[in-house]
Every structure is written in C-alpha cells, then in structure tokens.
Amino acid sequence: MKINERFYSKGRHLTMYYLSLNMADETSITAPGVDTSKKVPIAAEVIPGESTGRLRVFDTGVDAFPDTSGLGFRAVTVPNSYALPTSLTNLLGRETGIFPQNLKAKRSITLMADSANAVPVFVGDSNTHANATMADAIGFPIQPGAAITLEITNPAEIYLDCVTSDCTIFWIAV
Image (cartoon, rainbow, N blue to C red; front, side):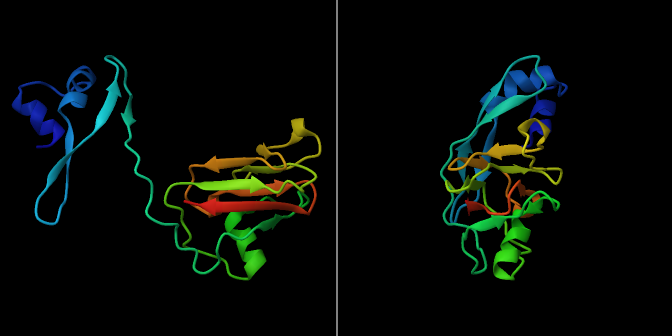
C-alpha cells in the first residue's frame, strides 16, 4: 500500500501534520528476495509542524571500489591558477592520456593533499580559484597533509586549483 492510499483508506487528507504524526511509525519498504520478500524497517525523525525530516540510515558500506577502467587511484598534479580550475577527471586524463568518461564513485570521493606541497590545494566547483592571498581565493583549502571527503560521486564535478604548479593530490573513491 502506498502512503497516499493508506491515508485515503483512513479517511484523512494527506497533510504535513498527518504525515509527521503517522509516517515514521507506519512506513516500511519491501525488499525483493529470491523466494520471499521481507520487510526492511526505515527509521525517520519527524518533528510535527516541520516541513522536513531526517532519515536514519543503517549503513552497511559498499561491496567494492568503483570501476576505474584500469586507471587505479593514482596521484594527480594540480596545475597552477594561471589557467582555469581543472576537474579531477581532466587531471586523470592529463596523467594517463585516458579521460575517464563514466567513472563514478558509489558514495564519496576523498582527496588528500601531499604533505610535500608548499601551498594548499583548493577544491570546489568550476568557480574554484587559488590565490596566494587566502582572502582572495575561491574554494575550500586543503592544507598539505590534510584530507577531505566529498559526498560527490562524479569526479568531473570536483574542481581543483593550486597557486604553484607542483601540488599533488591523492584520491580514492568509494
């Protein structure tokens, strides 16, 4: 039974108030099985009167790394900010000569700046711009030796920039 059908059968209009009061305690999903279906509980935190809620996740991880088409998780050199910021996909292409078009992480991508870098590497969207003056830079600085995990699965959407041309980034996708 779908949510709207359940509320209709109870003679109630589907409003945010009723959704908040009733959805979390009565909602379940049915997962397909080989011979049978079993109910898998979903936990949600819903505050009456609010228009949003929080889904509680029971994380089991992923089974394997994404397919890198033989590229592996190799370090890349980030060019300096005299050019435009470069996506992680394009950096991989510069290093290997193969531009991975369909590379997608299953959950996230972690970036770590080489501890030997003299300056931070900036990460962000296509507007990212490194600058020797931190106040004039655009993006999030990854200091040498530091790491950040981004819940972005498409490396073509992660842009990197560096003030010098010798910044190295290590990355891994999960």
